[in-house]
Length: 68
Image (cartoon, rainbow, N blue to C red; front, side):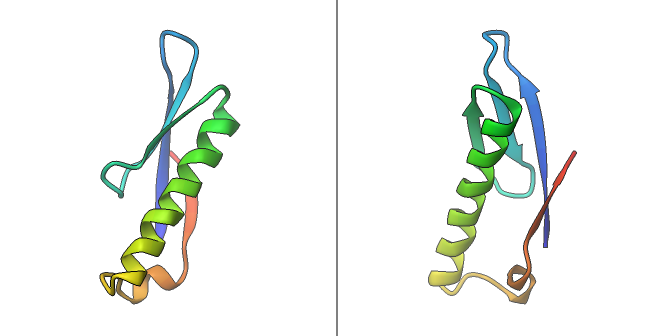
């Protein structure tokens, strides 16, 4: 499964990153790299929770991230 990360700089200078395919996977950071790292960690926690709850299919056996 490839997850797409979209990034944008807010008017206050912070960066926000979102994993498009995971509703609610948003994270702020002080730099693009910081925001990207935080949203990737969040996405992995969300996927792990789905696996633990037996809500995941075989598509989650391989995960990668791509910049939009």
